[in-house]
Length: 196
Ligand SMILES: [Zn+2]
Image (tube, rainbow, N blue to C red):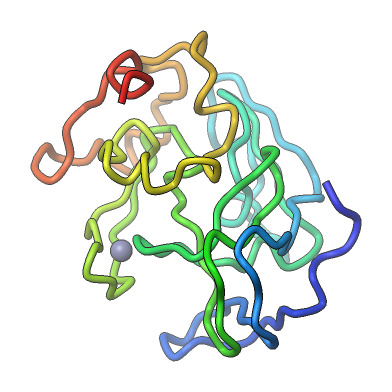
């Protein structure tokens, strides 16, 4: 994990009205962009133990890096938005790297399914031709996307000994974000995913 975020980034309002992170110079594939270098949160069964009040809305900005662990950033990492056609991805649990060459002015995004795997879900309007419309944890990520993101998926999701079913589920999360209906998604077994 590096101490400082890249100097080639700028946080500003997007055309959608939220905040995003944009490239101020051309960036090469593989370049380090920003780190989740802030407070760490752990929970056991109550997902809501990640505070989401006050100036730091940790729950919506932290990334998951273990079955019951998440981390926020004190820098730009927390402002990167999701895209279903991302130009960035995750390395070493906490670092965002460019997944392809990036032009000046492009918004930098990763796919939140590269790090998350609770039964969290979110409607997506990223506008990409590959948009999955409803995004959810890694277990719902189609095999073709897993391939496309090779090398940029958070390590904790690739651990072959990782418990698979239900460990990250808690009542609060299920209540707020119901499990996505089957349709574009199907459950993918860990064995199948690793064999792919
Ligand atoms: Zn999308």
